[in-house]
Amino acid sequence: MLPTDYEVVILGDSNVGKTALISRYIKDETPERGQPTVGAEFLVKTICEPHLNTKLKIWDTAGQKW
Image (tube, rainbow, N blue to C red; front, top):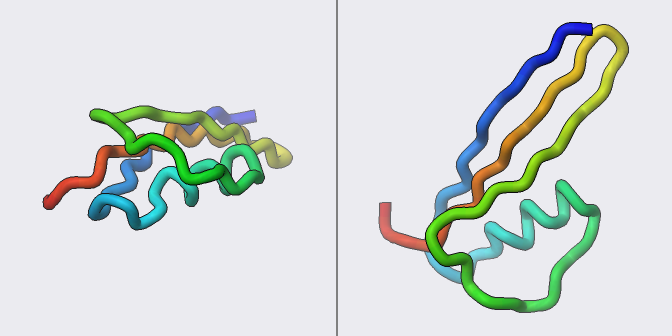
């Protein structure tokens, strides 16, 4: 199997659901409204397919104007 790693950064304004989107994809759950992200956090998702393992490091950023 060939390992493949990617980093993905989710950007957007405050309170648009970036953290909820990532939680839904990684953990298959919709979180209750929580605390805003401070700085940046990341979660990792590994996708296993025949002949290929893909690791996604998904960065969740604080809502800011970019």
